[in-house]
Image (cartoon, rainbow, N blue to C red):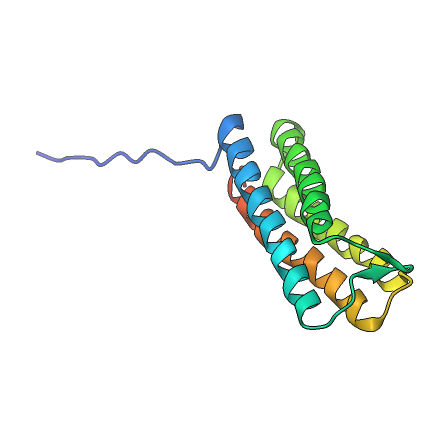
Length: 138
């Protein structure tokens, strides 16, 4: 008598709802993190002024939320239309993150402020991109 083991291949496909939930949780976490980074930087003496106009700490969270939600929308579209959604999402969002640093470099602000702005972009990306990417099919 012989027995045969059958394995069922598993896929990393995700439901739309799980992708959105994960994206929303990552958005909230990234918004809180960027506000914390901005608050700590400001408390350490780094100016939050760009072109002589102060950026409120909550402004970091709001903009992080807006652009993170754009990323979640991008992920949802890629999950539907891309052949390799995860790879496409990661490549696209990493490129967009790098591009998002350009205005910070060019901003009318001190070096510390520019560095803090760039750090907040990177903190948000490190939180949102991997969380959302894990929910996309490879």
